[in-house]
Image (cartoon, rainbow, N blue to C red; front, side):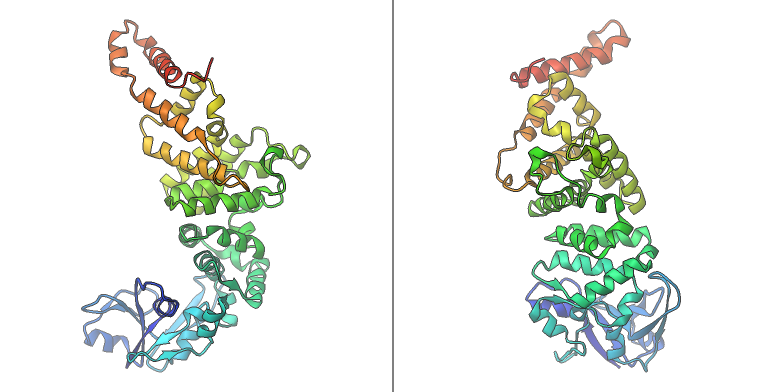
Length: 407
């Protein structure tokens, strides 16, 4: 029985990166032998155990055989006869198929160290094509390792998996798991661009894929199409270390432009309403959490008005803030402004331009928060008039806070 550290821990150590978690593979052992040594079983599909002291994961060396479409269509075989090389052969990328022996010796049968030096993402073997999740994983690694390039043969295999329908077997939970992790990487645009290039984005998020080739309005640098603009926007969100809901909202805010008839290009009048419906549908299909879904829909619907904050009448500003539920949920409203700022700065040369809309709307919200709705209600003889009186007081407060915005 021999144990090896495998996968990301070895890869990150070789790259000089912090090692977060260590996974181990065990060669020459049976489940009974692991239990006898005090390991606790946790694997449902194949034998995985937790170390009795460190609680790190130890998996028995195994092979896998494709039996049906999709990432669940596999039969796994774990036994003491399975070799380390056989176990490494089933892994996705060569840089993840390096093992380290207990004495520190590296086992690298597929050239992972050479690919690390070459800054290359390359699949281990033809079995890569049997698991559609691996398309998403390569895209996620492209977002994490921004100076790595995908090998041409790997990209060709990813294209084939999109073309032959293998990607269609992905279930929403796995798509969201990989996609959300990719959004939190340093360069999420690389994930989206790679999925578009290989054809997988059209299968898992067609609303977003349709933005590539759709021109931006003339005043928004028409030489950069909407797809390229969205890539810049999501990288702005990553550069500012914004949380996942903001990053997803930044990614999906312009979906409505993909629904504009080509005859109306480069104009996209009223695209926000269509975009909100598309963002809702996309988030529902991805099974995105409620906080991500709500912010994405809000940003798609309201980002145009947010950018126009300096020109809005006080009454329109109040309606915007009320519609966004900013009084009850100021933190989410702040995230909306963060997503919209990324949208503003996702245009070439606009990265450092002043963006006054955020401060205008924050000031308007503070003015609305200062209105004593309870006192207004208590002083109103006709209860039916209370909502209107409160609204009028909020409009007056916003007008006072932003005197440049006239009626």
